[in-house]
Image (cartoon, rainbow, N blue to C red):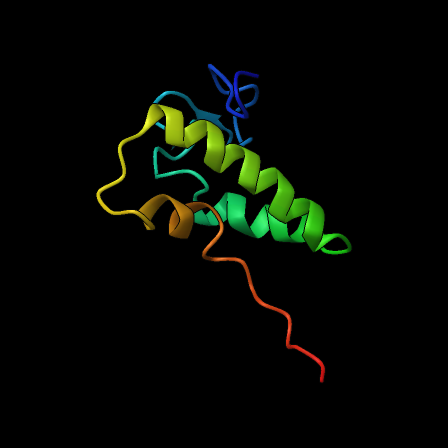
Length: 89
């Protein structure tokens, strides 16, 4: 892996990111694609903090490869889709 992304898909249905474009190696959508988002939520269902750390590292690597159209576009793409837990008073 290079900066959080694989240079080629490691499996036929992995939905792994391909750098430097940060597209899905399986379906070609912007990574994380809808399938990978669902899989990540399931994989990290007991540790959302670690999911945030993982996606933050991917965001940092992607920021070096991609030019975002706005300041928050990459942030929205990589971590903006994460469900928020309700705050307790």
